[in-house]
Length: 92
Length: 118
Image 1 (spheres, each protein chain N blue to C red):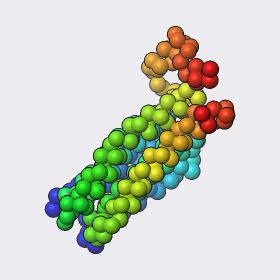
Image 2 (cartoon, rainbow over the protein chains, first blue to last red):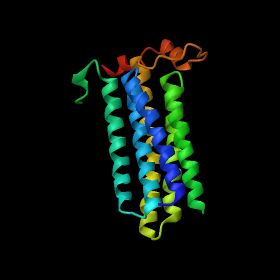
Image 3 (tube, each protein chain N blue to C red):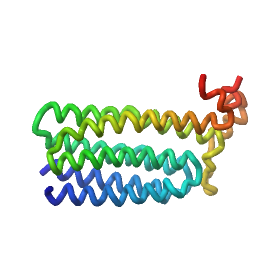
């Protein structure tokens, strides 16, 4: 792999580590949801950088699927945060 | 090459977003860093793929992912911020000086989660 994508991957790894610290620390569920959302975006960027570095373009489909799943997960979490006290409403 | 430029810029934006999520003092400020810088960073990395792509199909997939990110990031951020603010999970920074939404909630108490329970 050329040098520049390796540098970018290292920077992205540092960013992921910082986000994991926020994910563990919290303090509320909403903070963790935000950290997870950004982690998914970083993972998408990681895949994109890897594709540029190696030319393994099949991995782009994984990035697209990751974007879809991350969005649905964030929406579901937001709904859960909002209706935590009244679970019977979450069904409707 | 221009793809390398996009790679470096994108990864730096992602790093700034992660730093913001870690260091900023309250939830809404963290979301401000996460949503804008994070989406732009990941988007720039996808643009790097699109620029360096050997075929049109690869470029199309990269652009599609980028557009999807741009469309969904504001929706997700709005939903989290709405949920966190109205449930009181988003305690604002103690040096926050303006909270216009709280004034509006006093004026029209039909807003917020109480209204949606009926």
